[in-house]
Image (cartoon, one colour):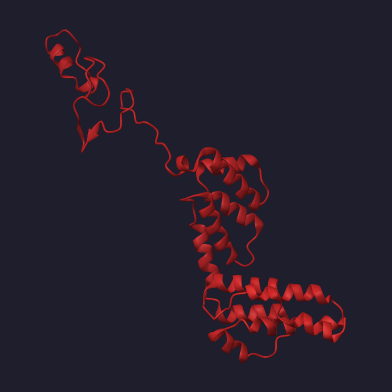
Length: 250
């Protein structure tokens, strides 16, 4: 590889046109995503084109200088005050140290601990991925445990039954389960019917209004057959009991 080839490899490629600028905003997600995009659109293609020979020893510094052309505002001012970077990883670490919000990892862990599915699987997985991206060093086992714990009970059961081994597999099973159950049914779970203390039929929705029974609605009385009251409150039964024809309702 000659120096002319290295020079061409060090120049911004057409791929770099897709790279957004970074202006020093102290947002953990923006920093991580920008560094990832810069690495994939600048450093990795240059390394693949040049290889690992002697001529490529200058490559990391060239990649950093190219990435620096996408810095703006306080990020660019910071870069201009730094010593020359000869390693991409050193550059990335230094930028994170300079602009990452304090305690960002701890805040992300707190957010992950409180994360639970309240909407669709897509919304939950997007939030989960965003948060875990801001936790350096998080293990796959921890990610799996946290992901499964935050799922709705019906979905969690299906994921556990599938015995998946990766978070990606768990996400796929969760999406399939949501489709099978129907997202609407999961978002609005059906409540179990309520029974009265005597084991009578389920109370119908709307049978009560403000704590008062409504005539003509609700379960039918087992004694007189009329609706709107239970056997224990049946006036007919009390009248019969007063006449000595029936035992008093308990």
